[in-house]
Image (cartoon, rainbow, N blue to C red; front, side, top):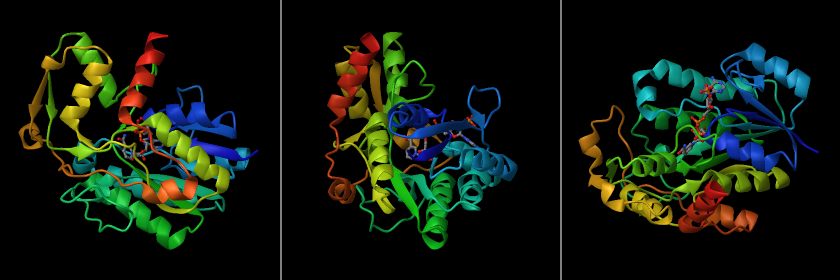
Length: 287
Ligand SMILES: NC(=O)c1ccc[n+]([C@@H]2O[C@H](COP(=O)([O-])OP(=O)(O)OC[C@H]3O[C@@H](n4cnc5c(N)ncnc54)[C@H](OP(=O)(O)O)[C@@H]3O)[C@@H](O)[C@H]2O)c1
């Protein structure tokens, strides 16, 4: 059985990967803090990495650790570089196994999405720049690697801290009006869909650059409306707004989303529909 280290294992995607991978592989869940029950692995700390590699002897490193707050990355560029770029380099130093890096559609400018793997990149936020730089470093320095681009990941479990679906459902349940942008387009992706893809990638040792996103392209406002319908909540509480009205620190790609034909043909998979994923989440919550 392969030994797999998951970094950032307590984040949104980490929770799904832990559940999905633990029956097929020896998984070690790690996080940046010591107070958690798992193993401390701060990817900016080379001593942490050396200790964990020496103890666990990984065949695969699945790097989910990142500074993911897009505005914070613009505010703290040095911090973002340290985690999102240097962290990747640190993890690959003294490692020869299969390295899997989660990347993002934010490597694109969002003028002409959805995008495939050959489309020209042009990040418009510092977060996107750091993720692209990590991609480029891997392409040039670490051939036994997989770069998997994702967009708008969501989940809703008891352990989920921040997620678009959780925010929409919890707000509407509390009769709270919410403003949702109607000019950002993506193919929203359930964390369990992408953890299934990751499991397949590990199984066959697939390397290279791939996109994965669930099947349906929609704007964030329509996604929120779909969530309200599936969870039987009041959709009139959802108000459409423009991204420019939010006055966010970092720019967002507007017409984005990821085409998935390449990974579909390599893995023989079919992306899930967003509606099916939301129904499964809703059913699980009421169990
Ligand atoms: N969420 C999305 O929509 C989306 C879309 C495309 C790509 N991605 C990529 O997918 C990956 C997982 O994202 P996610 O949604 O699960 O994000 P998340 O919930 O923010 O999880 C990221 C994790 O990284 C950890 N982390 C931060 N700095 C670290 C460090 N120095 N050392 C070790 N761990 C550190 C955080 O733990 P602490 O808070 O304890 O530090 C957090 O648990 C990321 O690479 C992200 O860029 C996400």
